[in-house]
Length: 581
Image: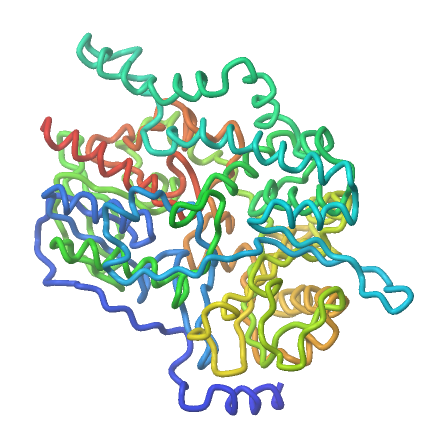
């Protein structure tokens, strides 16, 4: 490591700055004793909620416990000279209306769209001087078919039909993302006026049904069946099926053989950027630059954002209504409403006085599935990985495959299932699924000249090891070494290029970012925890049993991913309630 440190100092040059800190310009303003609304947590959803409320004339303050805003959408200079999107690392799902309404481009958001989208190299011996095969997929359908035909002519012909099939399903689901779920409580227990108003919440659901029409049963299967069953209906080649299956299990404690894995795939293909359906991209300056742009939009209209201000408790009046928050330093801040960007578990089990919540509600929240298979590894390197299946040029400049998601140990869906089974046994996967991204291939501002930052999104790793054993530093490094060994097999020389790394197991993700169980979605995106039932049945509309308290983070509908929909939807529900106060 001494040699690595020496190389790091040479590479970083004059860029050295204190590790773990990233300066953010946030219009904090002066802390006042009272606001119309308080938002707990400056994750991207909390910032979106604050921006919308402030634009609607609701005086809003945001309190963030960390020194940096963004939650999991954050940029941190962990290794001097190298800026990492430390947790979330790609953008696609951000709702188009948020991009427009909040004028994010005006507030500095710059995107680097990726094309191609994914690269899956094979681990096989090249014969006759030929390089190992690989699968490169992007926006060009004709080129995609040529790539797929190397493995199956039949699959090459089926791929456009599969893409059209998925496109129709995502277009049907899309309207559901931008509205609160059907108000079942209003329909069942409300006054006549409330019931009539609640009927309007059925519109997006009915529209989705009409869009799918007579094919609804086929689409229903995608939501409930294992993704392997869905993909086997369309394709025969394992490299293609495994590549597509990664989107069905990414961030989820499920195998491609797990029923319901199809919805997770949909959740990852329903986005788009700058009018291009399905496009994914890197944010210039890292994901924290997105959070900065949202914060800039919010503060430009008068919102106040405070870092290193931890909320200790939600305050409740004697009448049983929210009246503000108490900060960890003892300061009280009054407000008419409180929106929590924290997880449901943190919001309702830690920050809310339990006597004001029904016992059944508390029990349901405590039983939410928060299992996570994810270990995120951020790596600084002094050169690009040189894959056997796609060798680098002598100049060492990034090639198209360096720009996209590189899937390793993904030649076969059985490999993914075996990695999952290792985790169920309490062991980190022996051949983990690895999604490798190199954002500096498109955004050179992230690393010193000639160097790169690499994001490794890996699974499967358990929260606790076999026998309930906690992760030790030795175990953490042993797993990271195993991941590096896997990469070395595809790209010899990778390990020698490493200057430093940051390893975040599920407990680390929980500790640093407040993700329960390390779950990037706050709670699993399984069918029993979606739409009507997110976070729990009867409380899927951002409100909770305590009047004046709202959930606006990934644990609310429509779930995780950097989309901002939960924050925007919650803000509109809150604004409607404030008007009726």
